[in-house]
Image (cartoon, rainbow, N blue to C red; front, top):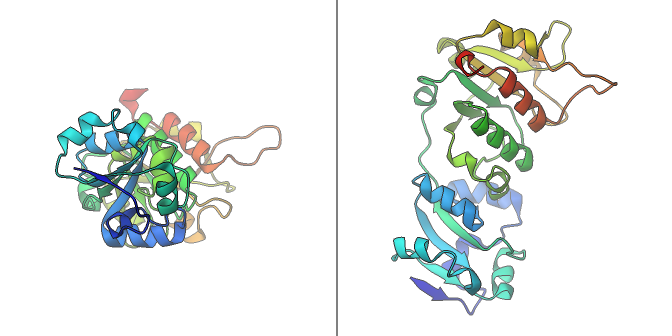
Length: 270
């Protein structure tokens, strides 16, 4: 259903307004049950994952590229406008082809997510959406079975997170914990060893942890700058570090996640 946009104040495109206001969108999108898939590649991955579109939003030059998608969803509005009108609505120049407002999928219960998982990542209070997306991309590529995010962690379905992840956030199950660090006990009850990435006097090296070949392992990564909380370090089964050289004391959390996921992958994947 193609709808030509002539007025940037058209109320039918309210889903796409003020996309550059991160704090507003972080609150608004979950409350309204939506997220924004930015770029034709990402929105295709969302659809392939079974997510349902609310509407499409694009310039006319991308109609041919998305003709098959629009034909598959003939009853879903496809708002088409000039680059200028779309920019007035969103707050930035839309140069990645198209967007879609998607229905946010129902949350996955944590117990269901843990069932059968061997390797999971737990993200404590990571608020940088670029890092969040990069971690999800590494998790999907390196056989992490699921991701848990703490109550104050950023939204994996915020558009920057999705874009940086290249849509892999749709491929890996994830859930938000309601209580943290009390949630660590849920992991222990499910049989997971919890390994917190931190530089402490008694930290195992990543190689030492990998050599143990734990059947179930949860790698806990902390927020940028501050790292993991003292309460998390106390509750975790162990702490683990990636040895550094040349005076470098740490890696960016996204880079550290990739190293840890690869080193600690499930035994049969070595």
